[in-house]
Image 1 (cartoon, rainbow, N blue to C red):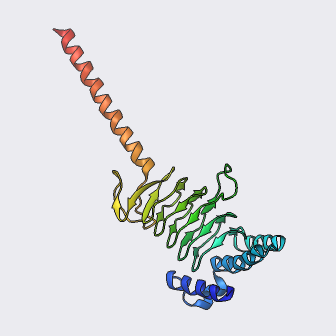
Image 2 (spheres, rainbow, N blue to C red):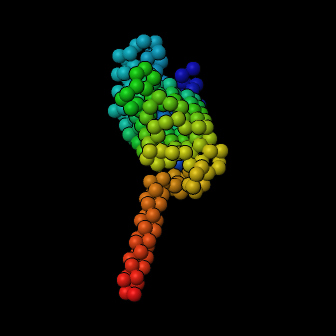
Image 3 (cartoon, rainbow, N blue to C red):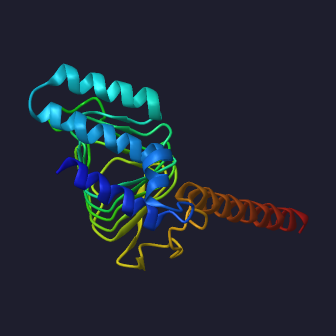
Length: 224
């Protein structure tokens, strides 16, 4: 069963990565697949209470791939870890089927929770480079998390979230608030922080104009 699942993982990576030429190439050369290969076995050991062996295998995998997946984490089918370096997935994290995770992603805890401490990622979720998803909440199916986003609360299904602290900018393809409705293509994503700074800058300019007008009116009054 483990090895059938690994074959599905490898085939999925080949189909979704334009740089992959064959399934054999994925088996031999893709560190994201190697991390899954080790994790499937470490998780089996973990669920059968061979905790030391499970952790030892996961640490070996971390050394070999640069990807740290706790053996207790539940990983669904056909996960595509692209590049992968620097990914950390915590003990109580859960990842659904057909997800994509880029390098530098953390599925971690906040340090304030007990028991279930890490996020649950739904099916067909894309988590972009450098994103941090922290806490025991759900990221809904078919959602997209922008590069370097810091997600600290639940994400509805079919949403796009960006920024620090991350906020929803699209749901079901429709924009939320005043954020432009860009698709999440790793380049053209809105930056909520930059938008807030622009709004602040416009308010400063407006206040400066009001002050200038008040000073002009005062000079004209004093000159009469």
